[in-house]
Length: 183
Image 1 (tube, rainbow, N blue to C red):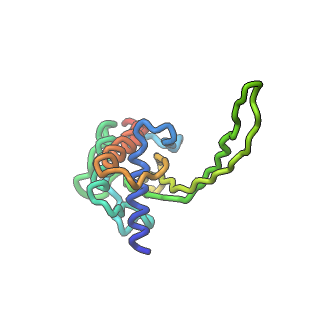
Image 2 (image 1 turned 90 degrees about the vertical axis):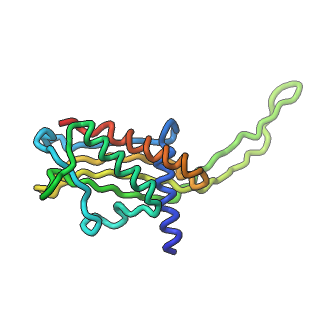
Image 3 (image 1 turned 120 degrees about the vertical axis):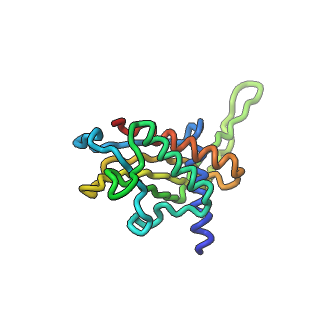
């Protein structure tokens, strides 16, 4: 069971990684409109023992480092600095979620003959797959309130190579962080 959970977590990252250029990959971001982000200057990763379950616990440490370094790069690019001591202005955490999905397709069984078209049989096909979502949360450390959430969601691709997973993870995080408010 634990191995299946680890595989799903890795697959979720693969899904997020598949974001780059995939039309079925969606990115969303939402900031609290009542929060003035200019008052924040520093950030730090929420300690894993304080984070909700499943946060910051990827089985693939190389992918985990890419997610974290991508989030950090996105925050730095928008004027935030890592906290060097004490409590930061913002806590950062992420979560990976996967869910089983199915899609139904009804391919047309139409064919042609000399005088026109005829309606052939219709075949209904169901495809089961996993869809994963990477969620990045940013919390006001002083008030312990969520101030921003970004997410990337796509079909999981567990069969792709490590290089492709790593590249897609980096691209997904870049897309998520592109909407983070600048200082």
